[in-house]
Image 1 (cartoon, one colour):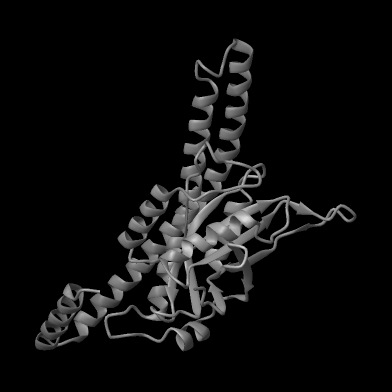
Image 2: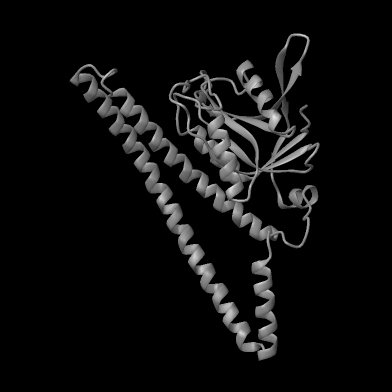
Length: 298
């Protein structure tokens, strides 16, 4: 049974979803949502902190349809566990069509709720323009599905969605124990995951295009040299576009690297200053306490 009444999403996760939705105009994209629920047994609120883009199967890639590959979902859950996160939902795009869930989306969402009553779906509208004004729009909705036994079908309903704030997270998701990171540390972790999501998007885009190109020029599909030249030209065009995006992302990562190095230097200087001011017995107690904290399991 669906239980959610509200969805919170970190700005970085939201913008990563938007970036992914706008990366491909001709086909739907998809991925999983990482975060936490306010209650394990009957969650009413979910906080989405980051995303993991999923590779699409060439056989089901389409402009108006996207399917969840069970193997990809399992791999995403394993990756989430590796980085200490949890899969709490999935997202996909609707290029050039309404943001409302289709009957396929409702059925997919209903089946995925077997993973948890708080499992949520997000849909991002992309490349939609008003034909009268030419103004584009970017809309997004959160939804869950309920099973209608009278006609044996899944019916979706939307859920209010807002951007996360530190105040809301502290109030709705209070710290549970002394081993948890501070809000500032958690925020930095979320930012890092947002950058990793962008890297993953490009990685999957290159992989998908390579597989599509190799399939298009295979012996059973590419019967003449002209078609092969056309496929090569299209592939080179896509690679050029992805390379441009890679340059921008490289600059973001370089800026992040400089920031991390500066922060590391600042912390090292602070530690050195404290060591000079502490007496030997005080310094020994502090170092023992630090080792205890580092060895403590999360």
